[in-house]
Length: 139
Image 1 (tube, rainbow, N blue to C red):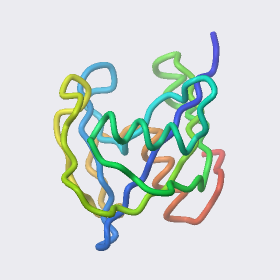
Image 2 (tube, helix red, strand yellow; image 1 turned 45 degrees about the vertical axis):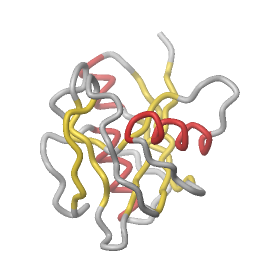
Image 3 (cartoon, rainbow, N blue to C red; image 1 turned 180 degrees about the horizontal axis):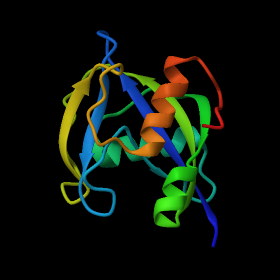
């Protein structure tokens, strides 16, 4: 068994809302920020830009790493251990679209203080770090 490294990208608009998707498939019915697995030779920033383009058709500029999450709860439940590198990107325009309707069924802008449930662990962890200006938390 190996540990998988992924990125989670918080896209925030001028109102302070974040973009979330409702997952379909293996991680249904969870709400989550967007992201995915890091490809070999790829920087975290390159991965964030690629994943956001692939998943919702937006081109993000200058995503910045702000934290790291060790997603132990998901490992205990599913047997898959992921480490998430968390990035922040400012929404600069364009219409987010569901580019992978087999993976995501709905998009919403959401107040990060009132997250929809159920919420994916890695996403909740990333949002909590961002809100608390923390780099890492063990819980």
